[in-house]
Length: 279
Image (cartoon, rainbow, N blue to C red):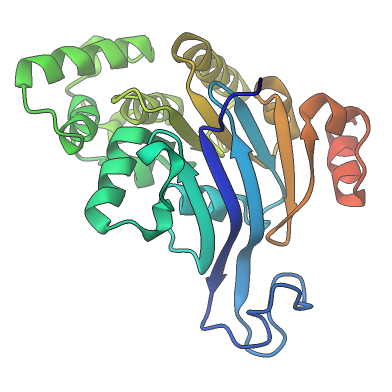
């Protein structure tokens, strides 16, 4: 019997602009993802997905395909136009997370979800120490015992290969790879059942990319966290994800087992992606 999804999402749409009667229709013919009448951009349009406990789901697509906006909506950084978002860890998936109160959203973000951004400046306070950044996530989830937080912070940073003699240094003094490792430590501080990772290797040297990806894979194996990984790079998705969704123009154009998509892509855009990986 298949387990219950950790995350279920139905018909998520995110619009930039005021919208109009024409483009608000689900079957409207847009120019790419832009409304020809009001000029609004539909960054995400009617996307549905499920992530199962312990699974890594990859989302791949070119720049502007909507993949980063999708994960930001799931982390509630971006407000959707519509969508139904259920988490098994929250009220046993009985409530649409997009409809809950702001205090409940904050609780979900801090206690049940983790996020690692492409740009560490979005996920870290660069002027605070690395330890303070991790402690911030613990405090937001209700921790108040300083001794316990200090011990937990040290354990997490050491596990993420951040030298303990640098715990009191601010991330602005760190390399890009180490900044990402501090972000990951912060994101998993409260043992969330779900972790979102958005283009976490972009801009890193190849050797640093490999270390970050190895760390992500180790965390998933050790903690059993369900992950949603966003990338424009199919090589990253191939290494980590068991299932993959391909996005283009705000929509999902193809989905399936990662091996299946790599070996027998159906959509012309996916075929181009796979060809670029193999050549």
